[in-house]
Amino acid sequence: MYEDGSKYVGWMRKGLKHGTGTYTSENGIVHEGIFDKDKQTNYGTETWTCGSSYHGEYENGYKNGKGVFQWSNGTSYAGYFKNDEQHGMGTYNFPDGRIYVGLWHNGRKHGKGTMKWPDGRKYHGEFVSDIISGYGVYKMKNGAIFEGYFQNGKKHGRGRYVNSRGYLQEGEWRRGKRLNNVLSYK
Image 1 (cartoon, helix red, strand yellow):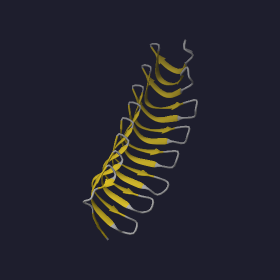
Image 2 (image 1 turned 30 degrees about the horizontal axis):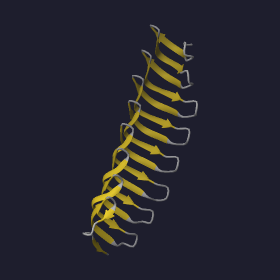
Image 3 (image 1 turned 120 degrees about the vertical axis):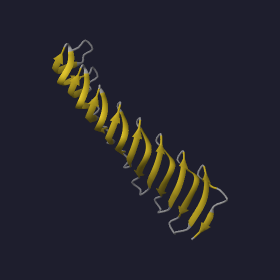
Image 4 (image 1 turned 45 degrees about the vertical axis):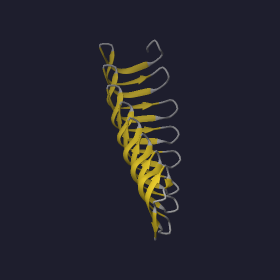
């Protein structure tokens, strides 16, 4: 037991956590796995008192590599981490039924990915810092499809919109609004 109320059960070397062990912090977070000079490394688990947990790889005390994070509200992430953040390819399941599969950078959706909504909407394309931005295809719940460029989550730039009856509009959009130079035909 340490002065702050935390405790460690396991192998030690020169007064430091080193080898297989279980560390429980003063606020109840339990770290189980392999330690190297007081830092969790290799593979291990973290469990919070609220019921959230992480199972995966560590390096120098940080979540690094492949892992699964399960939040107590039903949210989950399975994929790659870097310095405790989602980073690389991963799948994020939201508690409302949305699913994102794609690239992450420093804890944000960033790069190519696919977002699906429970009501049938689907976006496949580029994200920048959690926001739909760049080229993508967005299918709406009524079956209409927009293929083109987005900026800050809105249609912006060249694109094609096909409504649920097959009516096509091609042209330019700015901040989600069609410009007058849009060609329309069926």
